Amino acid sequence: MAEYLGGLDQGTTSTRFIIFDRRGNPVVCAQKEHEQIYPKPGWVEHDADEIWFRAEQVMGEAMAQASLEPRDLAAIGVTNQRETVVLWDRKTGRPVHNALVWQDTRVGHLVSEYSRLEDAGRFRAKTGLPLSTYFSSLKIRWLLDNVPGLAERARSGDILFGTIDSFLVWRLTGGLHVTDPTNASRTQLMNLETLDWDSSLLDAFGVPRCMLPEIRSSSEVYGPAVIDAVRGVPIAGILGDQQAALAGQACFYPGEAKNTYGTGCFLLMNTGREAIGSRFGLLTTVAFRFGNQPASYALEGSVAITGALVQWIRDNFGLIRESSEIESLARTVEDNGGIYFVPAFSGLYAPYWKHNARGIIAGLSRQTNKGHLARAALEATAFQTREVVEAMEKDAGFAVNVIRTDGGMVRNELLMQFQADILGRQVVRPVVQETTALGAAYAAGLATGFYRDLEELRAQWKVDRTWEPAMKPGERERLFGFWKKAVTKSFDWLES
Image (cartoon, rainbow, N blue to C red; front, top):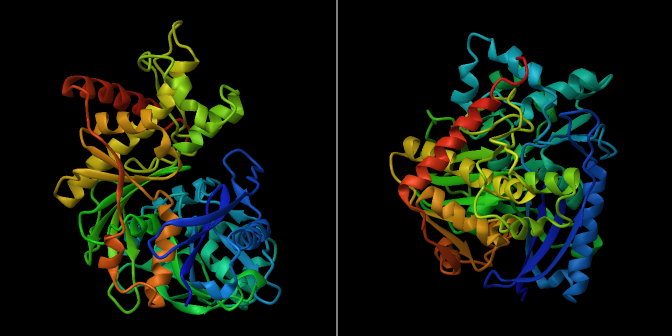
């Protein structure tokens, strides 16, 4: 009997394959980075063929490291960077252009154009998403408008669209074109009530329906893998990365929330069967839909740049050699020295949604040194998270008392303590921190009977460490007040 599950986690900067045992513990992990392509300022692309090559590599390496055969895996779940757009040829399977990454801002002019429509509010009403460079709809529109002959080929049925999950499953299964509601809900083309593609939205964005994958549940057997390393293993779970982390953190009930600290920061709270429309700058999204059960929804606050700011300091300024060194550099000073770093490199996401904001460093003095800069960079993540938490509590009508955390930055204990301090709330790190891949594996395990039910998964979640707030309320509000002042200075830096 198969005793393991696989989680294929395709992220913004790398692809990982993690094999988990029945208790949800990682057995082995293989990981490969892929190239970040920047053709012009504000443009961010990935080579989808390279991503597929890395996916094949890590699956093969992990299986070999664990000395496992395909029969040892009960199922594989797939999780992915969500809004990133891939268009490929139906016959050859080859991408027709580099993938446009969720961070890409080239469609800013289209956001302005669509925002001027008299009924622009219908986009948020139907999809839970504001008009933004973030989502897939306008990225598809840009590709159809700017790649010669592509629009005609798309209308004739020769071109397929997918978020990265669709592209990977297409390759994994030898041609199955599917997605799940969590990813579809990030395209701005799916109706949140029907969980299906919306004809009026497709017409508005000029996207032919024949390009689109079938929307299936997040947890069901889609088909068997056809590549050698995992041949015959059922592909049985698909979840967007942040929803996968919500499942990996066992946030299966309304009111439970997690925050993932990765390239960006993503706070999701399960709202149950109700899709709560946000009045305070958050997104309404699908949390998951397991099998034939009704969908669960979530409120989400997305912050574009958090861990990516640490990478920027490393790569653009050379202040550190490895991202992990940011903590020790920040500890060389007692505080931020009065400086605030607003990393609006590609605009601001929740709760502001200002695509024409740009990054600033405020409060510089002659005493400012690189330690202050490092500390301000970490604090920016915590300040942005507080803004999202406050908006979420207003929308939900109740307090978020505990934040379950995951992602690469949660190993930074200085950041986690400051997060608890500036929130005035408990911050918790789980024992198993690979929650994104774990959530995808959980979905696959539920679909194949490897797990009995959600209660079995809840019982496996355990706390590694808890941070309690230690900052005095007056100091907390003083620091946050300066942050709010700095944020306003980044607004409308570019002309609309």
